[in-house]
Length: 260
Length: 166
Image 1 (tube, rainbow over the protein chains, first blue to last red):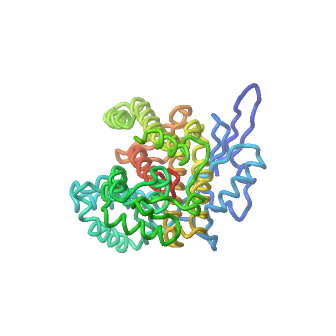
Image 2: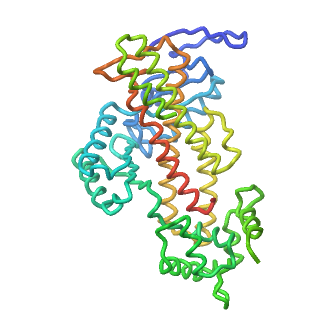
Image 3: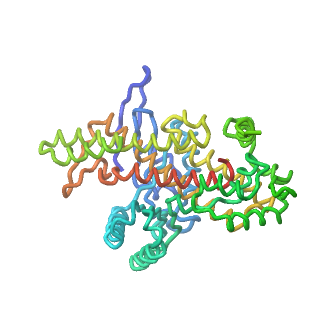
């Protein structure tokens, strides 16, 4: 560990800083996980660098966890009265793998994959974010199989794959409840029309099935007129409040716009 | 901002004089950080308008704590009332935790490199096998920051919507 004394002048105060002193302030059992430490003079922050290969979901021999580092950060902050940041760094080999996977996917699915990002949660587990073109959606499963095979060959494990395209998404039940609260009373045909502005992939059959599910959970009622309205149980779960992003405000604005 | 960074990177790589390489590469790091910061700030403003004013170095903590706390609170309520299943709750949490943790780490690291690039000229940009490095960090990797940030923000927005917060 380099031992550099820096004299930094801030607001007339002279601050004496030593990276060895910082390291000595770290509990012995955690010190071995810190690959580097740096003092940032511009905002007097302490930066601790921890390699991702040393991170495990739960603490075990030879590994630390994000939570343990978060707690260390707080302890150090109190002890040294400085801001402390922990940076989880990527191994050079991991960076190389990400670049290689990206190139192989691009080569195999020419132009269909708009973006591909991998993230090493630790030494073995990898999460991925993949964005495909409109036509690429047809081959999502193929892309996934190819990606998983590459991971297997590299002896890596898949955490999750997040598809970041939005046009083929479907709404969740909580979103539907909020939407219904704002637009109620509303019938199925009108609902399909307005929901499809946000979710183009939606169909009348799919929505009708979801509304049935909500009805069976006593979250909505279907009036004789065919209109759907929320029950008091549903009103208690839809996020509300006085902020202008609240569903209550959205509801008031929707009522104002409605043509009676 | 991103295209400015990309152009600065091209110029940095083309320069023959080390000092010129250094200054163009520093500016590219700066632009890639700001592109990521602005993408994140826009997203935070959509989630809660007051979050748009969050100071640069407080954003990683806000992502790790406040954003997660707001979603967790809604998820607990939705689970109690039977609106979401345990599997759905776990999937949403995994998605959010993955994206907030990655984005938070990306911004912490990118901010640090941006500060080195702007205020610590004594830390030089080095060239290793035609790759430009600032404190072991590749400029090529910094080029990915805005794209990665966009992907993480899309995931966070989706979870926010899926729990009925938007």
